[in-house]
Length: 597
Image 1 (tube, helix red, strand yellow):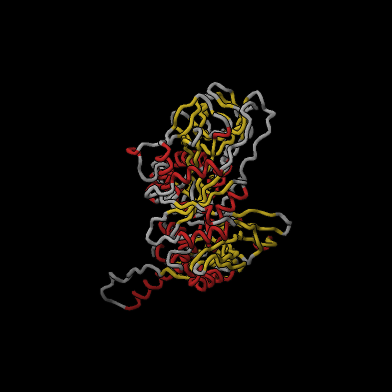
Image 2: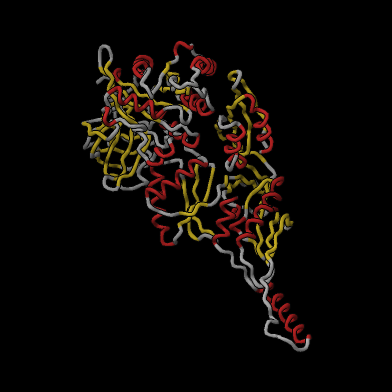
């Protein structure tokens, strides 16, 4: 086939706006799957995706479309919609020339709709607006069409109407893709250049690499070179997805498919790397991807110390398939050996933990999420701090900085006041508001990332009756009045429980933390003070009372001075225990505190 007969496109939308269902219908309409193979979420083959009803991993599939004069090859990439998986979307966009922007006919434009639109526009893609779910009783395609026309600057006549559930408008979508999405550019006779946009690990075949071929031809038996990693391999097999893997004789310029080359090392493949022929190392590498920077961190620890090696192997496999996920080994005095893991957001963190437990049959302990801070010392050295234990002494800190994100919120207009109050409570800075329609408003705020990673989204959903949506992007680091909040048990600092907090909230967090700890520390034979302190200043305290012991139980009678001697001896023993006795903090106490903070 010629390049003019290829079309590479993806579907982008907000969560639950019908991406996967429309993809299913497109596969059925083009014969990629038969009616008896048809089921909901055909491309969502992970159990987690089907259970949660969301797309986590982008999936590529090839379809054949019969036009009026010739047959076209359509390569579709179904992308995630959640903000935490926006990196998957950016990789998909780099492999396409067009995008279907899907908007729910009853919900209208949402925050991540706008974010995905900006990504597609910046990537230079042709955007085809599509209104989905027009069969719903609550559908308002005219009103939603006006919103799309306002945001995109297009004519309402150019907007496609579909219902993936009934099949309405699916043929019109396919025809529009052929007519309005440009064919890929490339030179089949030039040296090979292929972009790696994803990869997975197979226990028997090694690393399977997903590529978009821009120039040249890729065939079995070719010797290939990874420009970034420098790895050299011989191709065993190439093919494409329909949606299962189908063997092919070659992958040519403009096509999307997979490559198997006996790659056994998990570190041999980098997302965004360029694949070329081993005899042409001078080939100019393709623009890759901007490396994602994890913004939320937590600790993952095996429940059994003997499982540490298995956990590392499982994390390496996840890292291969999810380049936005990072990890490094660490040791906690409370939980033993584990790994400090970085994620793009809370859903990303939750999905990684569940995949770890399901796909590798592991049980892990997850600590509370934290964010990365920047510290500038008096020597003008800037350090990245992910853990309070890494902080230099307070007298050496010149400036403390926290990550700030620009949050775009789309919500019902009658909920604006309560959401404004929430943003102000979270130390936000107002940027702007814009009415998308008489009933829908876009609110933009700059907020500290540490204020939104815990329960901000839950509160937003509660205040907006479930209709509020949000998207955010990192702006950078800004100075803030941050302090290290330490926990002292019986006068000794417990590093594993230290947290970084804003000065205005430190006392509240300190009181909550010591109260939680008091519930889980058993009583000893002496009084145990539990304190939260900023430097040398104690801001909260709870006391675990001493365990009572009746030392006069055997004294049935006699002189009272005998009992007084026993009481005095008990007092001296308690004073001595208070000085030399050690408090045993059970692991359950650490978990209770780390899970709540």
